[in-house]
Every structure is written in structure tokens, then in C-alpha cells.
Image (tube, rainbow, N blue to C red; front, top):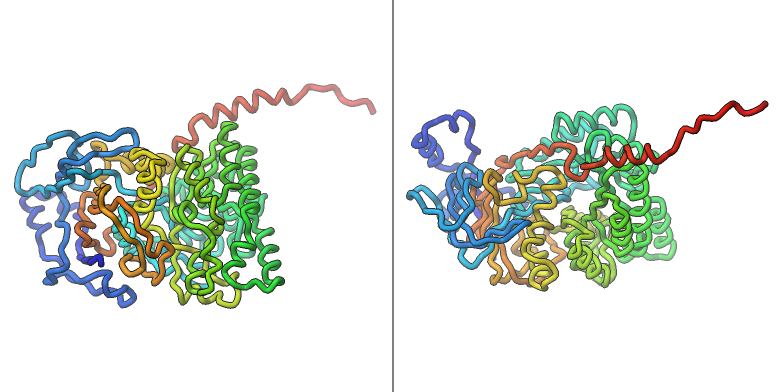
Length: 548
């Protein structure tokens, strides 16, 4: 069983940073305050600081030297040490001397030292389908850090279509954050005020991506005319347009068809929204983005149908980013036919987990670069919440876990099997996300000047996943009992050891919001292609007036 410690600390304030080094060290050595643990946490999850011998910690993390490991970036792997000070990588080279006794030395001999994972797709504290996801920003961050993810990007849902109100709500939700995070913004309606707010989100709040739901008719779904206007606005702002690609009208028809046939259980969820509806919406979104000439990001690609549309567009030179999620890569839909409702319902998500064969095809697409990075769509509901739909699959809250499991599963299923290299592992779990959302090399790399978000992975150590040991508040886990090889033994978040020897050392409120600037690399050359398009029109043609 994994034991975990919860220590309350504060980030160093500006006044403290101005102190002399001895004064700062004295400040950092002040006693830590014990905090109460929320009753909703499983008893194994956290323990209070102060006096419990089983609740060790990682120290203040101000100065760390990682020695003897293989440092892996997306561009190369090398034998090197890593020296960290004040939350930043200061040096990456072989044989860095220890210096003095105030440096925490971590031996990484025989292990890989890699950038912490960045999850591009999560839903923490999200209100959805009449309830709220069971993981908030603290329990979600606990899970992430224990699993080697040091940053994520969550989706802000507007309040009655209002972006500013939505952002304010999520700022409050993130008050207990324990690691770095950023925001995407969903767009659920369209008018001049929404267009104006989008500009404010980009220029004043560091949000550089907007999501459009082509599914969930009657709630989040947008129509094609709204999507077109949104794509145009995203392009003008240098913001990345994202789509949940399913044909919402057809899904609603499919759901009613299943109910009419007497199919009310979780299997009806998969049957009502087959791969063809994901493929159709993906193709439509891609073509509309091509019409506007703006980059497109397709979230949670779950089927061969959708993947092939992305592959076709990329072959034709279109800028389309495909994001598979862990559940779609390694699970199949057979679980939805399980006679135990509690087991079957925990696998309900949208688009659905597909039948066997789709996952292998998605893995191959990830290996070849057709799909570029891996998310989780971590959106957790416990068994009581899932039971809201015990008599009607349409009422089962959609979502599965993955924040804690992603880094381990991708290593075991993709690196251990030889499908991708260790440098590609870093690319698909961290670097590509940092580049797409324009925060590289601050994030997604172990380079001089990068944030010290680092994991140490032991390729020889095995793991077992499950609800008994995970840090999510959910009482179920879709990867229950899954075994694998390659375990994250140490997680460093902004220069502080937060996970080591099975001990979690984090504090609510210690997380930091990361602003993401517009016009990332995916926009390079857009203006030139626009100019080439205009030059190709051979119009307007000068004509005389037609005879009466």
C-alpha cells in the first residue's frame, strides 16, 4: 500500500526572496503546520504532518542534485546530472560536484530523469450531468503528482455562456491546487459579448485555446454556424480551436433508438454513439477548419474512423492535432457488457471506449506521429454517482480516471513493447503539449532555465494499479488490477520533492496558474498560406455591365 503525507507549507513570498541566504534558510526551516484531512479521503490517502514516523517528506526542495541518471528530453538522452535551485534547472551536465551539505542529493543510477508529465485534458471539480466530478484540484493534483504528472490543463465551463463568470468560478475551484495548471475555455453559445470575452481571455488571462462541443445536444453542443464563427475568432486571436467530435444530433437519435429497443444499460451508451458518428464529426470539423484556414486540435480521439480522418488531413498538409487518451489506447468496450452495473458503468465516457482493435490502431498512429500527444480526459465519478443512470444509460455521468495512471501505462504499453523510444515517450507525455500550448522550454524539458518539474522513473520496477492505492477520491478505477513495468519513484514539482519512496508531500494552495501565450508554432506560416489562397482566386473578374 502506498502511504502519503500531507504537509502545509507556503511558497516563498517576495519579501523572503529578498532576504540574505541564511535568513531565507531560517525561514524555510520554520515548523510546518499540521492540517486536517478531508473526511472524504480514503484512510490510506494522506496523514497529517508532525510526529507521525510514517509521514516523511521531501524537504523544502530549494537545492537538489540528481546524480547518475540518464537525462531524457524529447530531442536526446544523455548521461548527466541535474542541479536545481529555487525551482529552476541550473545545470545539466556530467559529474556536477555536490558542493555543500545544504544540497539534497538524489541517486538516479540506472534510472531515467525526465520532464514531468503534462496532461492536456482534464476535468476537475466540473459540474456535469447533474453532479460534480469527485476529484477537485487538490485530490486530482495528488493523483497526478503520485503518477509523475506535474502540470495539467483543465477546461473552464462558462456560466450560462459567460466566459468571465466561468473563469472566476474556476479560479475559486483551483484555490486548493497543489501543482501547476493552465486553462482551456469552452464555448457553449455565440454572440458579440462572447467574441469580446474571448479576446480578454487570451490577452489578459493567458488562455490560448477554446473548445467546441459537437456533442451533448441540449447542453454543451454547438451548431456549425457557431463553430465557424468560433474558428474564425480563434484564428484572429492566435488561439487553438479544439473540438469534441461526435455528431450530437445523430447521438441523440441513437440514444432514443436504444431506449426504444429496451436497451437501458451501459452497453446502450456504446451502441448509441458508434465510431461512424465520431468519424463524421471529425471530418466535418477538419473541413470547416480548412475552410477558415486555422489549426485544429481534436480531443480524445477514440476510434479508427476519427484517426483516419486526421491522417488524411495531415497528408494533405492541414494542421490538425490528434489527442488520444489512455483509456482509448489500452481498454476495449467489452467491460460495458459486464452484468455487474457498478463495473460496467465506470467505463462510460464519451466518445465511448471502442471495441478491440481500435486501441491497437491508435497506438500505431501514436507511434507514427499521426497522433501527437496523450491526455486522459480525467473526469471521475464514484459508483454512487454512476448509479444515477442505473435504469437509463443516458443518465450515467460520463467519465473515467487516468491522471495518476497515464505515465505508467504509456511507458508499459508503448516503451516496454518497443512501439516508441524513450525520447518519444517524453515527447508524447510532456514536450509536445508544452510546444502546442506555447510554454516550451519553460515546461516539457530539462534544460538550463526550465522549471524544475522532473520525474525519476525506474524501468525495472513493477506496478499494480487500483482503487485501493490510488489518490483519486473515486472508489473505482478503470485500470483495476492492471500490472506493468516502469515506475515513477520520484516527482519534483517546481524544485520541491513531492513524491518519493511512496510518500506524497503536498499542500493545498501551493499550486500555480500558468499563463499560455497565443500564436504558438502551429500558427507559423498561416499568413503566407492565406496570401497564397487570395492570389489563387483570380478574382474579382472585371466585367462590363450585362445588356438589359
